[in-house]
Image (cartoon, rainbow over all chains, first blue to last red; front, top):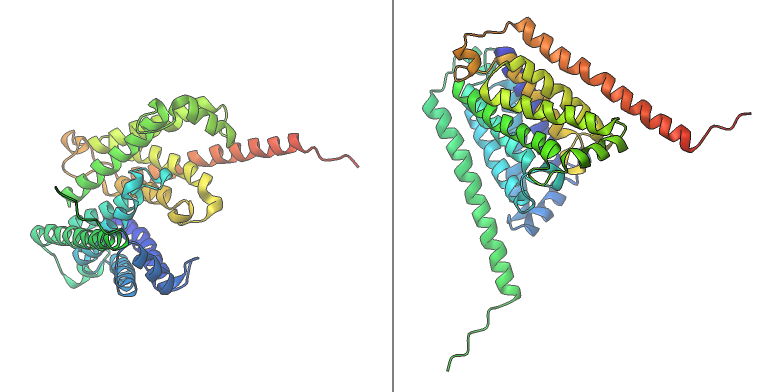
Length: 176
Length: 173
């Protein structure tokens, strides 16, 4: 049991740290914070730089916490939130990854939720420190991640809608 | 603990059933056995149709077993093997999913290995039937999945090399 959870935490945590680092720094073939900020601006997550910073720190920090097995419900919430937002970007292309869909973000969010619920297992800092969050706290963390992610998505939609209205104002209907 | 494993099993298993159905039945916008077989043959997995059948069945049946929490190490071995082969197709594009890399297959394979090691948890057919697999069985299942995938990849590479040689024969000096 504990060996499996350790494997999941390390593999998942390192991949998240990689994605977070891509957003914050020009590493692993990314364009760093500037590039991420421009992209975020264009899809309605504004101010782009601040939002890119939040996304990058959530993933880098959440990934590091998962690897260490520390504050796993918090790490889970951070990752679930970013994955809801990331998934929303792919939503128009459907589920499957081979068509550019949100499959990978769904699997990542699910695995983070799974870990938030199972806890990190014996080989973790939580276990060393004797921290045992109750199931209520674990479910709460998953919910916080979901709600925060949805709020960010709704806000970006509103921003894009406002853009569209500004570019193409609705003419008042002529009534007789 | 058990709730987390149940969540993991159900969603992961259903996604795998979906991938298997795409290959076997052309469901969810997939290409079915005929189309998948043609694709498989083109990338060296020959004969394409039987290989597509094997890949589709391992995903479909492996996914169902994972959802049920039945014979979890066996299901994991099937999924790990398929995911390593699938990952090999994406390997030339690197790790990251946004570049077409093998990230998703890695995550699926790792998640299956995790389930082999943790077991399916309390809400599972394994638990109902009183089946408990030792750590040795779990590690053996992971090793089986890895080992089974290697000859498949090697065979496909050899087939593609033979194609290339046939298209451009080496001149005899």
